[in-house]
Length: 270
Image (tube, rainbow, N blue to C red; front, top):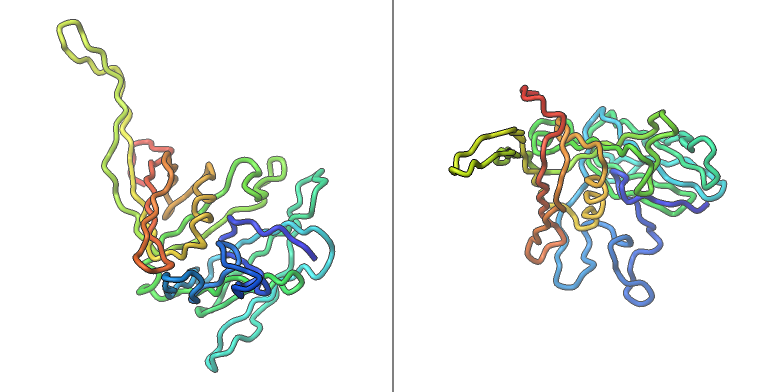
C-alpha cells in the first residue's frame, strides 16, 4: 500500500527502510530519525516530540491503494522495550465527489504518560518517538498550537464542503511572550503642521519562541503558520512575516521565533 504523508501532520513519519547508509542512501530532511548523528560535525540532541495526556492527536494520510490501513501504537514499558498499546482504525474523511486517492484520519488520545511511537506497518512508515506528559514540571514548558485552514491545501483535507473534517493540535517546547504593542494610525497634517488623528487601530502583538527543535520539524512549523486559523495557547493569532531560525552551534536542534499579531481583537482581555 502506498500513501502520501503530509508534512503538516503534528507527528512526523519516515520510512525506516530508507534511513541513510552513506553508500546508496545519503541523509536529507525526510529520511532520518532523531538522536542519531546524520550530518558530519552536527551532534544529535535529545529531542522527543511532546504531547499531553488526554489530548487528542489527529493525523491524516492519503491512501493510494488498498491494504491494511490501521496504525499500531507502541509504548515503552518498565523493561525498556516497546509493546503494543493500541491500534488506530482509519476514519474516512475523503471529500464528497473526490476522484483522487482516499483520505484517512487517525485519532489517538493517550491515556497514560510515557514514550510512544506509531507503526504504519503496511507502508513501512514509522513515527518519531514522542513523549506524553502529565506533570506540570514538563507541561508548563510547552506551548499549544491548534490550526486549520479554511480551504483544503498544503496536502491536507480540512473541509468537505461546509463540514470541518480536520483540526490539528501540536505542542512544542517554547514561550509565548508579549510583544511591543502596535498601532496603525491615519493622520492629517495641516499646512500649519498640526496633526489631527483620523483613526487609530491598536494591535496586540506577541512573540512565539520555540526552543530546542529538531531541524526535521522546521517545514512542519512553516506549514502550520501558513494556515489562516491558528490558536496559540488559546488566543487567535496570525503571522505577517516568515519565521526566524537560529542555529544551536554544532547541534541538530534549532530555535525558532515567530512574530504574531492577535486577530479578533475587540479591546477586551481574553
